[in-house]
Amino acid sequence: MLQKVSSHLLRCGASTLPIRRSHAYSGNPTGLGALGSLFRVHPSVSQALAEHQPVVALESTIITHGMPFPHNLSTAMEVESLVRAQGAIPATVGVLRGRVHVGLSSEELEYLACSEGSLKISRRDLPYAISKGLSGGTTVSATMIAAHSAGIPVFVTGGIGGVHRGGEHSLDVSADLTELGRTPVAVVSAGVKSILDIGRTLEFLETQGVCVATYGQSNNFPAFFSPQSGFTSPYHVRDPEEAAKLIGRDEACTRSSGLLIAVPICEEHAAVGQQIDDAIQTAVAEASFVEIRGKDVTPFILRRVNELTKGKSLEANVALIHNNAKVGSQIACELAKRRHDRKRKQPTSYHVVIGGINVDFIAKGKTEDIFGQTNPGNVCQSFGGVGRNIADILSRLGRRVLFISAIGSDSHSHAVLNYCQHMNTSGIARLADQRTATYCAVITESGELSLGLGDMDIHQQITEQYVSRLIDLLACNYPPSYYVCGLAKELALSVWYEPTDSVKASKPFQSESWKQLSYSSPNLAELCTMNTTLGLQTPDAGPVVCCALCVTSCQRRDSERLWSGR
Image (cartoon, rainbow, N blue to C red):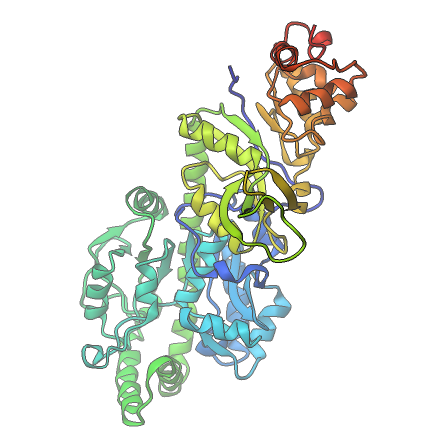
């Protein structure tokens, strides 16, 4: 009965609605769900994600703890420029004054680079830093959380953490490794920092189910400053195309773990590798002697190695980060291209549903009369919204559905997306500083509605500009009904109108738009509202006549007599 049509999303006014899209890894958002409005995506990153452009996540610990000022700031800005030069959008992640930022302005980069006492923020440190309103650089693990939550599939860093030397006794294992086992983001790095136990690190990654591949012509696993560590990766990828293909296949096999692509340092900078390795051995011994442990070890060793090599390690460090950024950006661009090509090859016909997503709370009293004080009862939570319900049904019937709606950036949004995993949610805009719609119904013991309260302002964020081509199914909570009906007329396609309640039932009938409706499913009260809006007399009749009115009115025999009931 419903005709398949195609649709795509457009920018809304002057700004692009930040759509939470299905990216190379499409599991559930993790970690940042409780942050709500404390999670900020830079407008350039938000727009790139909405337009399906390649985006590369970058960490900020290298700014706050990896290099001295001003080298840290210049390196961060150079890396972002390199990413842009390859055709991708950089998204440096950091925590500023208790707020997680995905994408930083030049002023924010400088703030992090110059700040004294910045925290080194891993997964475990996020709640504390946010609750105290502190600032700091995000490690690999925290950056992965933010990148995945924003929908960024590729993350570039210098080197990941690992199992520290002697870790079999101290149990000093970086959270980067467990994050790779739980967060589906592809991490591009120069392998594992050479100050670590590389062999045990690779074993730990295998235990975590992390796919590891060297970028290049061999399986030699790099050791940060050296292209060879003496260990090998299980696999290797020769170019960005193979790497992007691997990421895509990893998506098909698992949605709950990351992937590590190890990029060897360029040969011209690998020449000083032995000198740097000797300095590392000295620095490691010094750190052990003065009993430096935990997250302070890496900054101490990097600083001492730079001193012992008279700046050569810093030059090599910058070079490998530049190389990683170039390779990672190329992979991100190839991944975006493959996704675009795959979408072009897919059938373009969809059932397109515009409608609301609500988190519903139903409070049922244990008495028939509910008064203005605390009343005994039961409260349950569910997920609704007429649009969501219809898209859910069509999806379960095996139809290809594009559901267009909007949710906030809060804890409710994550619960909604988790509940709707079986649906195509790529058309759902996720709006910062907005609340996901909620509805609370208070009903009596017999089930009669006593009071209903709806917080649904976010539904007004979807406008005519947001929708293109045609909609097959229209939940009338949204104003684009005139626009949709006009397109339906041009393309001779069907529109199904679901009124949702008697107050909203009159919307299309306040203009000539109603003449383009093919189907509707009102209840009796909604049908009477439609009839009245058209200036037609509503018969005062018994149940049989009213039932006949409802049935005959829903049959489109003649557009001029659609709602007359005659």
